[in-house]
Image 1 (tube, protein in one colour):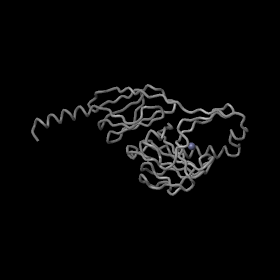
Image 2 (tube, rainbow, N blue to C red; image 1 turned 45 degrees about the vertical axis):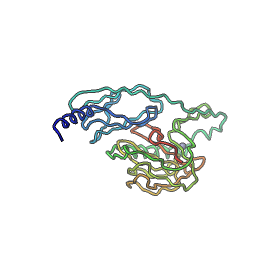
Image 3 (cartoon, rainbow, N blue to C red; image 1 turned 30 degrees about the vertical axis):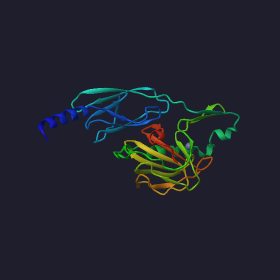
Image 4 (tube, protein in one colour; image 1 turned 90 degrees about the vertical axis):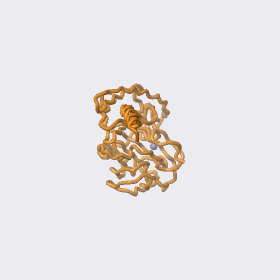
Length: 267
Ligand SMILES: [Zn+2]
């Protein structure tokens, strides 16, 4: 190669080295994936963001996240850029149901201790932040079927706002195959009061998939699963009204919309 071409390539490389790339849907509830030059420090709204050895990182925004955010990157040579992030506001489906028998609204006393322990186990299963880079791959739907429930919707029962629905539901008969949306490590495979047979997979960088109401679970804690590998089957275990897969995405303490990671419909 001629010396001139080398110099040009060097200049182009230099420009590319000062960029912050962000990929994903700029909405509330979204998980975004980013790339900066190796060795760059990234800060979101004043909080340091973990950047891996390849300069990749993830950030997420909750269901009701504020719309304006600021991402700052400090490159290895000390120069800094600020990247404003403007999210689109989402409208969630809110449903009011009154005149319900109160027993339907609150769980019985006898299961409160169990629910508390379930929550501890789930939090523990999502507590690690690993450098697995499956989170940077293209996700695929974990089951085929119609979408029967979406992220963010909420019911108000007898005037009491219930916990919003944080998953995407895919309808399907009991026994329908459930596969890993991306590769990862199983961190929980357990029967829980609300969500029945529940599976959690670590995809790296603090991002986890959770699968609720499974009939069968075909993997165990510690197993490494490949994208597309069967992990269980659709069921109606726990407090489910009928067989469906409820798939959730968590990043650190945030509950994000799985549909911001997959394209198209699960058909
Ligand atoms: Zn659901």
